[in-house]
Length: 139
Image (cartoon, rainbow, N blue to C red; front, top):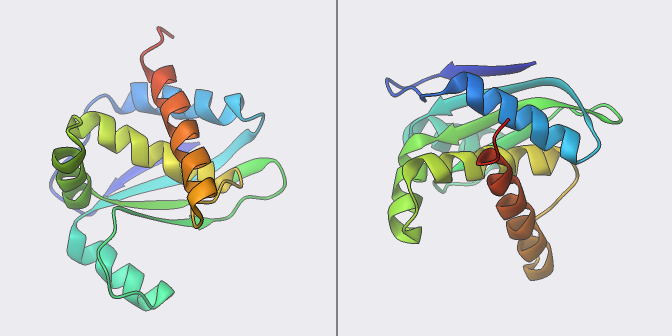
Protein backbone atom coordinates (compact mmCIF):
# COMPACT_ATOMS: atom_id res chain seq x y z
CA UNK A 1 0.00 0.00 0.00
CA UNK A 2 1.24 3.47 -0.89
CA UNK A 3 -0.07 6.40 1.14
CA UNK A 4 0.32 10.13 0.61
CA UNK A 5 0.17 12.54 3.55
CA UNK A 6 0.61 16.29 3.46
CA UNK A 7 2.10 18.57 6.10
CA UNK A 8 1.89 21.43 3.61
CA UNK A 9 -0.84 23.17 1.63
CA UNK A 10 0.57 21.92 -1.68
CA UNK A 11 -0.79 18.64 -3.00
CA UNK A 12 0.50 16.47 -5.81
CA UNK A 13 -1.52 15.91 -8.93
CA UNK A 14 -2.01 12.46 -10.40
CA UNK A 15 -1.66 10.54 -7.13
CA UNK A 16 -3.16 7.39 -8.68
CA UNK A 17 -0.63 7.46 -11.53
CA UNK A 18 2.24 7.99 -9.08
CA UNK A 19 1.07 5.06 -6.94
CA UNK A 20 0.89 2.77 -9.98
CA UNK A 21 4.38 3.86 -11.02
CA UNK A 22 5.90 3.31 -7.55
CA UNK A 23 4.33 -0.15 -7.49
CA UNK A 24 6.09 -0.85 -10.82
CA UNK A 25 9.37 0.50 -9.41
CA UNK A 26 9.10 -1.93 -6.49
CA UNK A 27 8.34 -4.87 -8.81
CA UNK A 28 11.21 -3.94 -11.14
CA UNK A 29 13.59 -4.47 -8.22
CA UNK A 30 12.05 -7.91 -7.57
CA UNK A 31 10.60 -6.75 -4.27
CA UNK A 32 7.09 -6.78 -2.86
CA UNK A 33 5.19 -3.78 -1.61
CA UNK A 34 4.40 -3.52 2.05
CA UNK A 35 3.36 -0.08 3.27
CA UNK A 36 5.19 3.01 2.04
CA UNK A 37 4.10 6.36 3.41
CA UNK A 38 5.10 9.52 1.60
CA UNK A 39 4.89 12.58 3.81
CA UNK A 40 5.17 15.82 1.85
CA UNK A 41 6.22 18.80 3.91
CA UNK A 42 8.18 22.06 3.86
CA UNK A 43 11.82 22.82 4.67
CA UNK A 44 11.28 23.65 8.34
CA UNK A 45 9.30 20.46 9.01
CA UNK A 46 12.03 18.30 7.45
CA UNK A 47 14.83 20.28 9.12
CA UNK A 48 13.29 19.48 12.51
CA UNK A 49 13.20 15.76 11.65
CA UNK A 50 16.81 15.97 10.47
CA UNK A 51 17.85 17.64 13.74
CA UNK A 52 15.78 15.44 16.07
CA UNK A 53 16.41 12.02 14.52
CA UNK A 54 19.71 12.31 12.61
CA UNK A 55 21.46 15.13 14.53
CA UNK A 56 22.01 17.01 11.25
CA UNK A 57 21.40 20.75 11.18
CA UNK A 58 20.93 21.08 7.42
CA UNK A 59 18.09 21.31 4.95
CA UNK A 60 17.52 18.27 2.76
CA UNK A 61 15.02 17.18 0.17
CA UNK A 62 14.35 13.68 1.52
CA UNK A 63 14.68 11.59 4.65
CA UNK A 64 13.59 7.96 4.67
CA UNK A 65 12.95 5.66 7.59
CA UNK A 66 13.19 2.07 6.42
CA UNK A 67 10.87 -0.59 7.86
CA UNK A 68 11.60 -3.19 5.18
CA UNK A 69 11.18 -6.77 6.31
CA UNK A 70 12.99 -9.23 4.06
CA UNK A 71 11.80 -8.67 0.50
CA UNK A 72 8.75 -6.59 1.52
CA UNK A 73 9.50 -2.87 1.23
CA UNK A 74 8.06 -0.47 3.75
CA UNK A 75 8.76 2.73 5.57
CA UNK A 76 8.21 6.46 5.75
CA UNK A 77 9.63 8.85 3.17
CA UNK A 78 9.57 12.54 4.10
CA UNK A 79 9.98 14.95 1.17
CA UNK A 80 10.37 18.72 1.39
CA UNK A 81 8.48 20.17 -1.56
CA UNK A 82 10.37 23.45 -1.05
CA UNK A 83 13.74 21.70 -1.49
CA UNK A 84 12.40 19.76 -4.47
CA UNK A 85 11.32 23.03 -6.14
CA UNK A 86 14.74 24.57 -5.50
CA UNK A 87 16.55 21.49 -6.82
CA UNK A 88 14.35 21.50 -9.93
CA UNK A 89 15.46 25.07 -10.63
CA UNK A 90 19.14 24.24 -10.00
CA UNK A 91 19.11 21.11 -12.17
CA UNK A 92 16.82 22.62 -14.82
CA UNK A 93 14.22 19.89 -14.37
CA UNK A 94 10.48 20.20 -14.00
CA UNK A 95 9.09 20.18 -10.47
CA UNK A 96 7.09 17.03 -11.28
CA UNK A 97 10.15 15.14 -12.50
CA UNK A 98 12.18 16.15 -9.45
CA UNK A 99 9.36 14.97 -7.15
CA UNK A 100 9.36 11.62 -8.96
CA UNK A 101 13.17 11.44 -8.66
CA UNK A 102 13.11 11.80 -4.87
CA UNK A 103 10.14 9.45 -4.57
CA UNK A 104 12.12 6.79 -6.45
CA UNK A 105 15.24 7.66 -4.44
CA UNK A 106 13.47 6.77 -1.19
CA UNK A 107 12.25 3.44 -2.55
CA UNK A 108 15.73 2.65 -3.86
CA UNK A 109 17.12 3.19 -0.36
CA UNK A 110 14.57 0.63 0.88
CA UNK A 111 15.90 -1.72 -1.82
CA UNK A 112 19.39 -1.42 -0.31
CA UNK A 113 20.98 1.19 -2.56
CA UNK A 114 23.18 3.74 -0.84
CA UNK A 115 24.60 7.09 -1.90
CA UNK A 116 27.42 7.94 0.53
CA UNK A 117 30.38 7.29 -1.78
CA UNK A 118 30.94 8.57 -5.31
CA UNK A 119 30.41 5.08 -6.74
CA UNK A 120 27.24 4.51 -4.71
CA UNK A 121 25.88 7.93 -5.71
CA UNK A 122 26.57 7.19 -9.37
CA UNK A 123 24.72 3.88 -9.21
CA UNK A 124 21.85 5.55 -7.33
CA UNK A 125 21.57 8.24 -10.02
CA UNK A 126 21.56 5.57 -12.75
CA UNK A 127 18.79 3.68 -10.94
CA UNK A 128 16.80 6.89 -10.44
CA UNK A 129 17.02 7.63 -14.17
CA UNK A 130 15.96 4.05 -14.98
CA UNK A 131 12.92 4.38 -12.70
CA UNK A 132 12.05 7.85 -14.04
CA UNK A 133 11.96 6.43 -17.56
CA UNK A 134 9.40 3.87 -16.37
CA UNK A 135 6.94 6.65 -15.48
CA UNK A 136 6.65 7.72 -19.09
CA UNK A 137 5.90 4.19 -20.36
CA UNK A 138 2.21 3.67 -20.94
CA UNK A 139 0.76 1.46 -18.22
